Amino acid sequence: MAADKGITKAFHFFADTNAVIKRENDTLIKGKAGILNYYINKDLDNVLLQWTPDFIEVSEAGDLAYTYGGYDFIVIDPETKDSTVYSGIFHTVWKKQTDNTWKYVWD
Image (cartoon, rainbow, N blue to C red):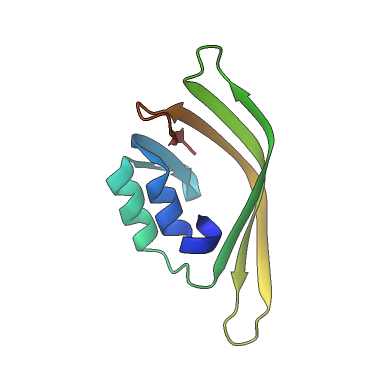
């Protein structure tokens, strides 16, 4: 979804109502509405986000899971088409919803 509809829509759509994301300077952004507001205020028109989980584990009860792996945050200069890649590690905790979909509670 991040590639097709944008980072803002993806992070908002997959957020649990009480989700929390940790961003720059260890800032915590809380709640689905807070996450949407955070991303709406970012200029992400020329940004690509790519990631691949290296590990996935689901709890025995089947209601919580976590993933981690590497990501690339790619900023493309609209004039020169040059790109700058910021790489890092992600860790996401997922919660199964009552409709059997998965939403993240921590990212």
